[in-house]
Image (cartoon, rainbow, N blue to C red; front, side):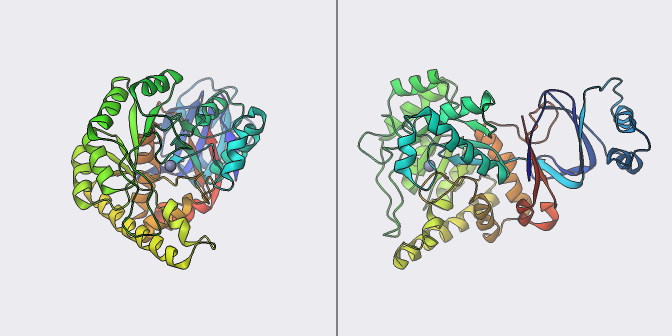
Length: 415
Ligand SMILES: [Zn+2]
């Protein structure tokens, strides 16, 4: 696997198979023209003879560029690079809609200690980014941390100090004082929404309920807000042009969040069919995050009794995810990586595997992992003219081979 940082100059990529948007095939032997990290044009299908030329079977130096000129009708394409992916499948990069970059899933105390030392957070962040990228994840949305580390890391990647994915930042999660979320935190009030907007967050994160329990099936921490207070925060965020993502672990919290105008529901364990119908009707999004519960079924130190409860919770969740797709809800893939025992990037594939096990088609899974994730995080919906080129190149075509193709990454390309 090789990560390519796209140059500003002309860049041409020949895609054997191209998956463009919504997990749909866009064509075979397509030539992407990228300039300044943006897809300027898409040509094709390129005739076989010309693809042979493009794949390096040139008779004399200069033929490659000449062939590109013929296809694109451009006269001067000097200073160009070319990547031959004629044997591969090219698709949009994967999106993880729910992570916490300030943590690593291994040692929260050590991660927290690094927050005060900018020189130690950078190498830690670099290894988290590397793990995300090597698993094909080129865009993430951060669900917040107490110190707003995600904002700092977004700046580092934007300024190209460390190669990393596109980051949708929320700064600090807003919660009710003295309730779950102390590591994510800031008190939820109008001032803090305005402060976060000024700090340049992309979205607002609100913690509307406590945590799901794996010790007692059906138990979730209490609601954090009155409906009026929650609606007030959502309205304030919307008035500033910011979408709101809500940690909502119970059906009650989901119901209240939907009524208050929340844009994306995070987790939603024990979600009811009624809430899902409402979600579909209101066209709100859902990031179900199986990993934070699934993980307890494989951590050896967890009591088998509790592992059984965790399994019951995530199995039910799988059924609801299947129903959500059938209802046409925009479901995005989120792992909650950075949370206990969930390392960045590594369990994304497992999340997809559980979708597959739930009965979803590969096309639906690809849509959730790309187009849906992009619309939830505010990124480009796919491989389209005029949009940033965040590309994943696979040795196999997932629409034919299934999601195992995501384990055979050849290249990732990012701006
Ligand atoms: Zn989270």
